[in-house]
Picture 1: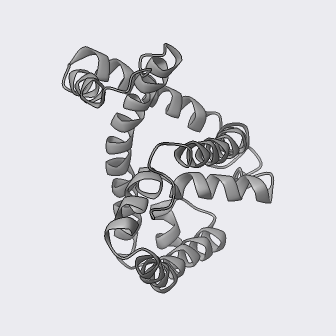
Picture 2: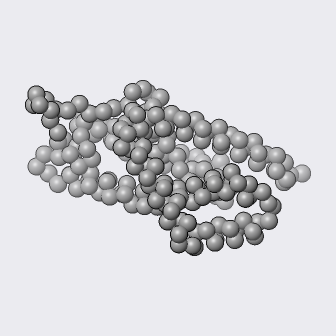
Picture 3: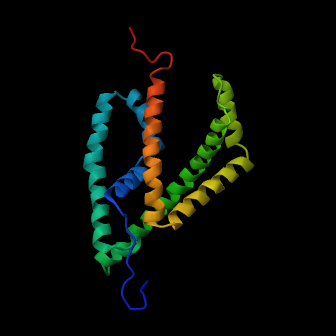
Amino acid sequence: MKNTNNQPAKRESFGSSFGVLVALAGSAVGLGNLWRFPYLVGQNGGAAFILIYLGFVILAGLPVMLSEFIIGRRSQASARAAFLKLAPGTHWGIVGVLGVICCILILSFYSVVGGWGLEYLFKAVCFDFNTGDQAALKTMFSNFSTSVGAPLICHTIFLGLTAGIVSAGVQNGIEKFSKVMMPLLFLIVIGIAVRSMTLPGSGPRI
């Protein structure tokens, strides 16, 4: 899009390095890191598994991340337009399209889980989890996730919140929200870790 002076409209960018950092962390840190990864570490050799995991991150993940940075900085364009700008006359634009489709598919999963999170936040505030009965907690989740109305409402609310943040722009939306939520998530994780060390059976085995 161009302005009235026929000059390209300036693309919005992050306002600080910290904003970039927390936004990147927010896009990378998910349920897999907080829940599944520790479980897999315990099931697959502990420190040995972590070393192999870090090796794959360095060999595969880091080059892909740097490539995305380079393509974005060089083109200053959208996912598809970036490839068309850097490689005109080629079919590389399909890679950008596939990237967008991948993001949509990921959102279709995380928006459902995000809706579950909103429901659990509401139940936590109402002290509905103040019980040690594991069977009751399992039944509570099963009843909620298999119902029709409640998950759909939570899913819609989560999508609405996401759309509102994104529509506010990079600095006033994504960056501002990430600067609050990511440090808060960090504090919550620390609190969970401290709490887990005080539970029965968390001490060293003799």
